[in-house]
Length: 184
Length: 421
Image 1 (cartoon, one colour):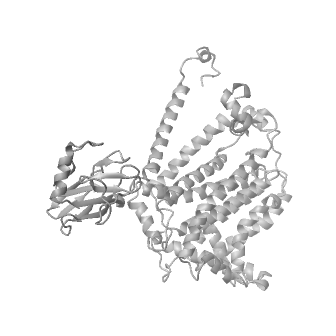
Image 2 (cartoon, chains in turn blue, green; image 1 turned 90 degrees about the horizontal axis):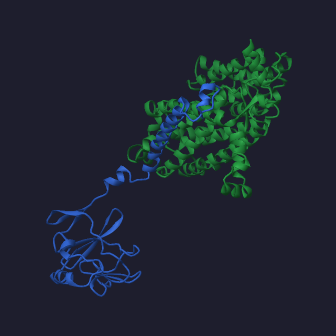
Image 3 (cartoon, chains in turn blue, orange; image 1 turned 30 degrees about the vertical axis):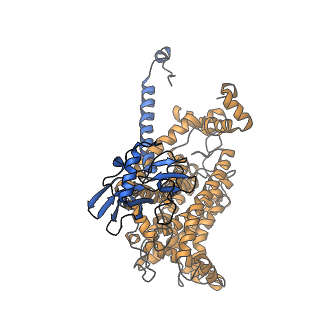
């Protein structure tokens, strides 16, 4: 960069010249410009505004009888909403002291004990566990059973046996009224 | 970077796959005439615009739906909901116009300085094919938003093929995949619009291959003979091309950010309606000169009515053929021009006709954008006539009759004599 016909300058060949400065600053501005231009092309793959607008789902809890579960779709994923029986709530509370692979109390997993709301995707490899419909196997702990690789979840949706590492995750939700809930 | 300076790993790879010495040879050492002016920037600019079009186009295809019921809405969704969708679409939309601006300047540069002459005939001809491929791509891309101009543009252009005797109507049905421009047409246009840019990339590779065989022409139109006449491509022309790119991107960005619909038609923001034609259909600006030539051929146009053309074909077919001929004739430029001297700098008479031809193309473009009525019909017919007279009569005659000035001995001699003078 520093070579020039001027003998005075070539004597100080290691000196920073005006040309070096211009070269570096120009390249830096160009690099920043390029990086700025690249960002929109990456960000366009993120969820669009209309996709985000559909990011929450409202659920009418009225028709769900005690002991019944429904599956609702939230952000393209199944969410289990279970109206738990008194027995289920009791056994979930008792199992707080059992040996749990992913320790968590039942109270920490619900806002109202009778409503258990979880994302119905097995934490092992993403299958949907059985047990949400009547007649489906509920596993050894009376909750859910994943047929893919044999994970058993209890009445609080906690992993008890099998290869899954974590409890079924709880989505963000809140109750709008006694019979209405908003997920997301 | 000679072989000795190579890093051992680079050397190992290069011995097996010589990408590094190839790049060194074609992008670094590559001897380039030292007298290139800024008109020589437009080749690399065209290449960069092609890349911008590919990148934005691939991204748009991630969000676009090629179906008559959804296409228009999916484009509006890109504009309103997709993150930076408005920016990416406006770059792509205006990028089409930028591509043609750059390529047209690149072509007029070639015409002025005789860049098509031996031994660069094939280089030039590949360029004409690139233009044709660009036109097909641009036309099909314009159909995709499924607005009124998309639909009626597609209808008019596909109907050009109905001018072909006997099989015309069958060909049009084949193009449509139905009995009018409809969903099958939109689907195939989307498929081909995605394909064609890669065909262009292939043609560009051939174009560059041919270019690197005999290197760039230059404003003097004489061959570089000694090392004194050329400079290594890097850093001299990489930096010059980058500087030109900076200036060009400012021009490009002005339209993207401040006048994004300058080159477009408002009617294309109305969803396609097969039952109603807009009152005034115009193609995109880069097609206007050809459109003017197409429309010039009416039953009473003297170039048609008083020539043997009228005995053998309809005015409609003559117009369609003239339009295609206006581009295909450019393939013959290396032979139409019989001059021994390339650059118009040394051919004053030819240079004058070049500028008349340039103006003629501009006026054809203006005429193409006007309704076909009143005085515009006659202006269109006069400029169409001149277009063909220029290519088929003036160039062959002037290039063979004019006695050009003597070009300098060498590129470096031209520089030193100027410095002394």
